[in-house]
Length: 113
Image (cartoon, rainbow, N blue to C red):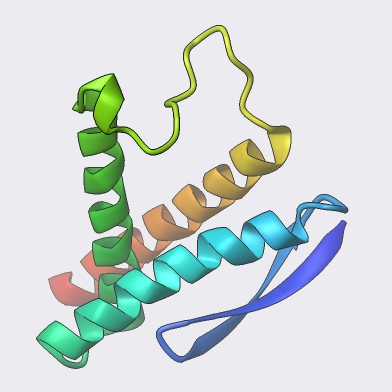
C-alpha cells in the first residue's frame, strides 16, 4: 500500500491507496479540497465534519447532474453498468464514504449534546 499526504480545508491527512494509485487519489482530493476552500470562503468557518460533508454533497450533486445530463453535454462518458470502474477508485471512494459517514455520526453526537 502506498501512502499519500493530502490537505483539505487546512488539515492534513495520510491516506492509503494501492501502488500506482497515488496520482488519482491526489487528483480526487484536489477536487474535494477545491470545494472545501470555496465553501469556507463563502460561508466562513465550519468544523471538519461540516466542511467534508458539504463538499461531498456538492460533488454528489454534480455527479447526479452529470448522470442525468444529455450525453452530448458530458465532458467524459459516465461508466455504464457493463464497464468496469478501477479497483483503486472504488477503494478510494469507499474509504472516503466511510470517513464522511463517521464524521456525520460524530457531528450528530456532538450536536445532540
